[in-house]
Image 1 (cartoon, rainbow, N blue to C red):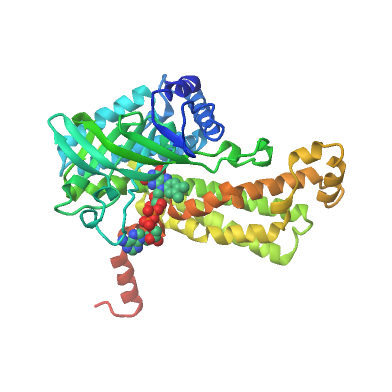
Image 2: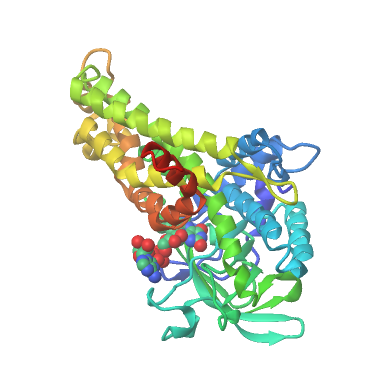
Length: 458
Ligand SMILES: Cc1cc2nc3c(=O)[nH]c(=O)nc-3n(C[C@H](O)[C@H](O)[C@H](O)COP(=O)(O)OP(=O)(O)OC[C@H]3O[C@@H](n4cnc5c(N)ncnc54)[C@H](O)[C@@H]3O)c2cc1C
């Protein structure tokens, strides 16, 4: 297993990664991206402390609901880079089971890569979302053929790919890019039905980053985002050579969507688990700030918090159901229920903004205007801000201020904005979750039930 320090050193491999117009040569010490690198390094060290027989817990392939539940907790605790790595590996394991009859020639190399990735203890990020050009047109009808990643040259020992994958979480601070089609492909689109694994430092790969990491010197006012930021990257493939052993699909259009669908499942399970914790945290913040404001017993506040509690409980129930109804694939790996995962992710995302509204409504304007921690330390202002941020003798002004900071950081600042959009878009938009939920719901059984109620069954 890699230590956190070894992981940080491994990023110095000549990768071409950029932030706000400049190439980044030293990721760990970069002011905006460095904290994310250090968080990923902490994840490595924490996982090492959980190792079983010298192996990272990320090598565990769950084979029962209980093992799946344990892994959801471990991966959540280990942070975003562990999460995207684990979901990448589980995507490959799930996809291998699903393509084994139609494209058996790739199974051996997929399994070989999984083994190699686990023994090198690397981090893998997920490159699915193409630039996509005009959304109403398929890849071959785009003005720019590079709107979707595709093969531009076939050689005896591999292929050359061109295109870009956008919004890729953690791309610059991982080691490998799991690059797969974003959607189903049709006959004639063989060059777009390409799934490969590309090292981040491969010649021709360039990554342009953005981040919602706080830009303030004193991160005490950002209790959530200071330790949770992860850069998103535009991953550009400028004629990148991929050797045969790193190709997992090459032209089999009927299988093009299998990888993205497999990943969507794991990605949404991760999203659901994050949402379940996030919804409980929002309930806690709403209750604490209501109590600190002296309004814990007020009827309209209790009603809003009750709605937040119901929301949090329904999300967690879907997470539990997704795990309890997990199925075992052909290679023994347990994967969560598509139905409950997607219905839960949809419910969490679709109602998130209403829960934020309740929290903001309950909290008050100091969500945005509460003074900084350093104002409490300034002898000229400290006692005054403590006095006016306090509400009664048992509610300290700094305590109440810190609650406001957590609410602002989580829901109303750069990270809050990221959350608002991410809840809707990550793992595919609401539309994608509606389609998958519908596909896995037993509509015939529901129709039979309705016919019986209407007295129309023969
Ligand atoms: C913070 C963040 C992190 C992300 N991380 C990753 C990542 O790690 N890896 C990754 O691959 N992706 C990632 N994504 C991308 C995410 O999966 C996409 O944003 C999402 O799938 C939507 O794609 P899009 O952004 O291109 O929007 P669009 O596809 O343009 O969608 C916008 C709207 O148009 C609708 N629409 C699009 N096409 C059609 C059509 N043909 N017909 C009808 N309606 C249509 C959609 O349903 C949606 O309502 C991330 C996104 C965010 C915001």
